[in-house]
Image (tube, rainbow, N blue to C red; front, side, top):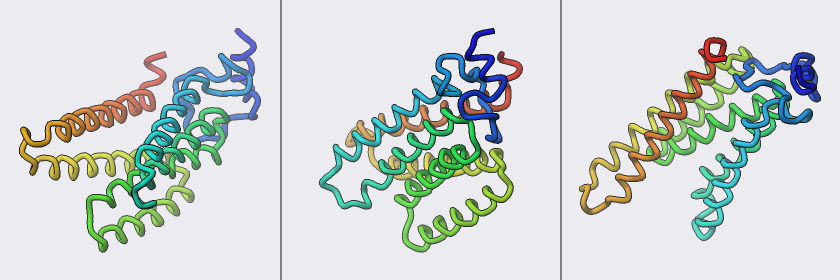
Length: 196
C-alpha cells in the first residue's frame, strides 16, 4: 500500500469523504493534496475551453458569453470537487453543470420558456440541496442534455445539408461526444465495483 492509498483510506489531506459519490479513481494515489488527481486535471479542459470561448467571442454582447462562463464555473467546481471529495465542493460542481445546461437550453426557446427554465432551476436547487441526491442531479443533467441535443437537432435539421456542412459536423460531433460522455459517466457511477 502506497502512502497515497493509505491517505485515501483515512480521508487524506481534506479529511474523510463527505461527498455523496466517490468516483472509480483511487484517492490520493498521485498526490497527497488531491483526492482524484486525473479527474481534477480534466477540469483544466473545461476552464481552457471556457477561456477560449470568451476570448474568441469577446466582441459579442455579454449574455452571449454566459454559456462559456458557465463552462468555466463547471471546470472550477469540478476541480474543487475532485480535489477534495467534500460535499460543499460537490455542490459547486453539480449545480453549475445544471445551470450551464439550462442556459444553453434557454438559447433555443423564447421568453416564457426561459422563465420556466429559471424557475425549474430554483426548484431543482432547493430539492437537490435538501435531499443531497446525486441521482436527482444525474437525472436532471441527462434530461437537459437530451433536450438540448433534440432542440439543436431540430434547428440544424431545418438547414439544407449542402449549405451548412459545418453546422451538421458540429451537431454530430457535439451530440456524439456529449452522449458518449454521459454514458461513460454513468458506467463509472453505477459499475465501478465491477470494473475495479
